[in-house]
Length: 114
Image 1 (tube, one colour):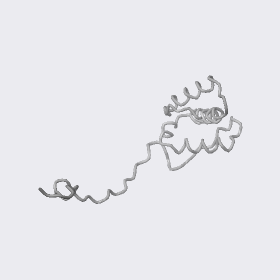
Image 2 (cartoon, rainbow, N blue to C red):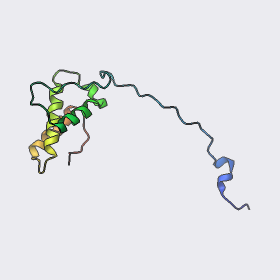
Image 3 (tube, one colour):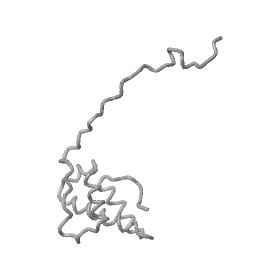
Image 4 (cartoon, rainbow, N blue to C red):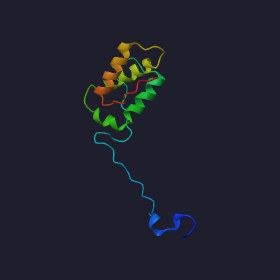
């Protein structure tokens, strides 16, 4: 019987595989580059926190689904609610509306801001 490690057995060694080449993931249809649409003119100017979250959401793959008219306002409303719900003790009404908007926009992450 041989002593030593079994890793020397040829059937236990993995064959050498070259590293996989970087794969470019195509952008979803409906998105053109990193374009972030302007905040809806009918709403009060966004705060800095709202501007940051607005850019994050419009840079996400899900944003490709928001090409229909009216989605900019829905996303802006979601952004406002997310920022408000980060404040201490958000109301249950705010949290329920936040969940509803996330669902409507396809952002069912199931996590409330905290």
